Amino acid sequence: MDDTPQTSKETFRPSNIEQLDSPAYTLAALDQGFLLGDSMRGVRFLLEYAKAEECLRSWGVRSTIVVFGSARVREDGPESHSRWYREARAFARLASERGGALTSNGGLRDNVIATGGGPGIMEAANRGAGDAGAPSIGFNITLPEEQQPNPYSTPALTFQFHYFAMRKMHLAMRANALVAFPGGFGTFDELFEILTLRQTKKAPAIPIVLFDEQYWRSAVNFEALIDSGTIDRSDCDLFRFAETSEDIWSELLSCGLGAPGLSCPASQFSRTTSSNAS
Image (tube, rainbow, N blue to C red; front, top):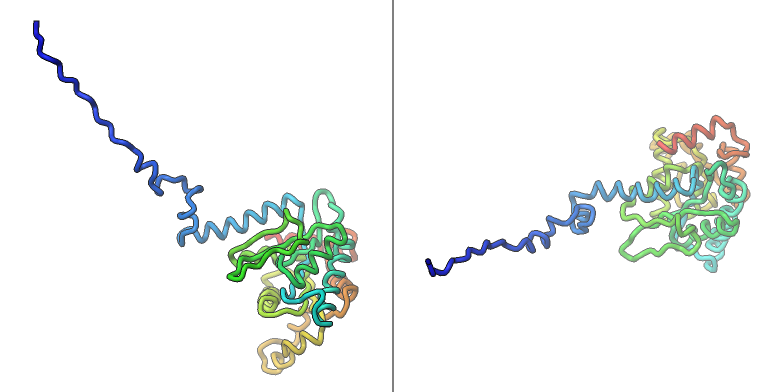
């Protein structure tokens, strides 16, 4: 009998801890470092579009009235600022009451007030819609000096964007009308982008109203642009002026603001909303 001890051969199995802990092994959808990298900029842009779009559709928002204006205006500020704030609030209320935002027509809402979601004129417009008991939208933006959303936009319709371009796209794509109150660089940027889209026929012929003619004519020398040949006189027909909230509403209607029940041919309303959705 062989009493020689048997040598047991133990099989060595290396650990896979390093593989499991490697960033490369993280699911792409859960890898924040990857998603925030340069190569994913297009994906982040798409996500900003899709998130807001999904929420707006779930609320049945078919069309909007976009209100632009300075974030620096305060209700208790100088008389001109106080007036702008007051009229923006009053306009948003009457537009919400008369334009179709309150009543959901077959699950769809029309002429819902939409703003940049910040303070000033944006706050006033969201507040006015709230006065009417209507929903309103706030498309906020991340800034170096953080801009907080105002407390009056509908929480479920208050969005935060990183990209100005996507924010402006969402502001424009459902717009049935644009109302621009006095403002600074941001307001000018948003207004002139829409005017450019209108001038070049890249956007439907929506009504555009500028509030406070004296302000706009002092801030922008339209006659100088015409005299220098950089725009045609007919380009100034792309917008109207108004001095009160009721004036704004009247101008919008006279320019063909579309919504069920308003004095606008159904064919025009259908064309406007279908164009905005493309």
